[in-house]
Image 1 (cartoon, rainbow, N blue to C red):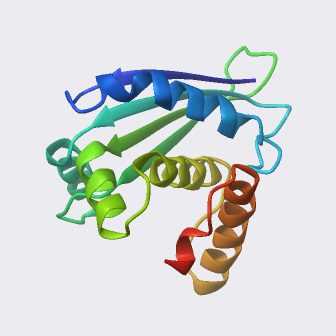
Image 2 (image 1 turned 135 degrees about the vertical axis):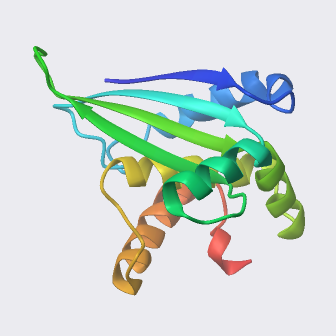
Length: 156
């Protein structure tokens, strides 16, 4: 089972919450394509933040002193549970996502969908440190985005 919740840390997000909730429901319909496992429960907390907070976290956890669109953290919890559970925190910066969508001339919600798909793949073990890993992750993203009627973002 995949459960999600929102925590707003920026005033740029509340007007968008209803639409984001609808997006997540659509994205989760493709849980098999996103490699979510049936034998694991997922609790995903989307922390909707700004550049200031995400930059601070990026420096603390990745040693990179700049803002980013998304940071994803996963913890596995197996204590006294019938099913393994993954607790997932997904930090999203409205400012960076908005800026990037304007630069690339794409719809904010299409870009946000891509970022969430990317994050869900990270939750399920995909990485992009090596070129082969990046190519595979990109293929998975494109496949899911196509099913969501979103153009390949790597062709822009």
